Length: 400
Image (cartoon, rainbow, N blue to C red):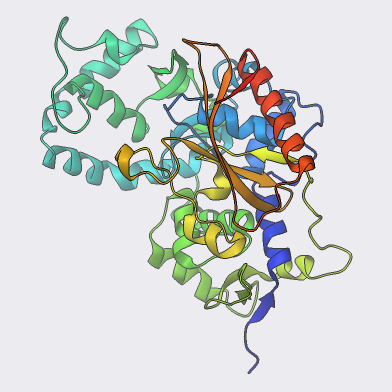
């Protein structure tokens, strides 16, 4: 019996870059339809509240296409409802056609979320659920600040949420409410039927079809992965469910594959769609080289979400140091990885100094060990920083 197939490191990198939307031409004109396709191909785009240069979702999308426009995203989310915001491993923007699959997530997490929040001393939120839905149904989309006792001070502890805010988040994460938009990054909660297209809201899929979809579409975007990685992509399933799905397809549409790491070593086999492996190793269909441009990645970029995978395939050890005490940080509070073609070549600490100089201020730059600090590489970085400065409305680039 033959052993697992082998995938070399170059092919692995190119597959991951393509699967994460980083192999497409970065200057292609992008309208709202093209933006929707780009998000659909990636799967989802994480939303995060930290604002140093720009919100994570805008940075992620601009990195892939410099013609990205925020208003196209707002249109898809707020005007047309072709995208919706909910939870994967974190708050994310997703195509609305996926909402029928998220119904299974809502069903699965209701009891777990409720009991977990009650265990943290937030059980009082359950008494507000019906009243909040009724009020939103009558008044329209509302924010968390529209609820609670006037003048009420936030509690200390886990989130500093009042009970109504907790209820709003519970209803959103379990499908009882949807996000109609954001104002100054604050969520506008509304009824799902006033946010999502009726066809997406009304569609239903069986449990079996849901599990097959969650595993298959995850592996299509991951290209190769373990059951834990497959389950964790959408964060909709347990590892055991993904493992059973893989085993049922062993030797048919799925292959076991050993992926060569950046240092030339190989880990234990993982799974890959047979058709995907054939295409990746075929001379005529092998994944193309990624654009040679140097690009700045958000710390929440989907390419670097799985840090272990990133280190093995790209040889790049990355950690977000937001929650590390300043004195113990190796680099900085919010450091951006640098992607050059198919290599991660460094990291940069920068901020849009909105209250001071107005510039995109660079506080630190670290190239990877052994990398040649050529003039061409520095010019490529300067060009990328100028693109970002224009995108965020900064008044040039300031090196400190």
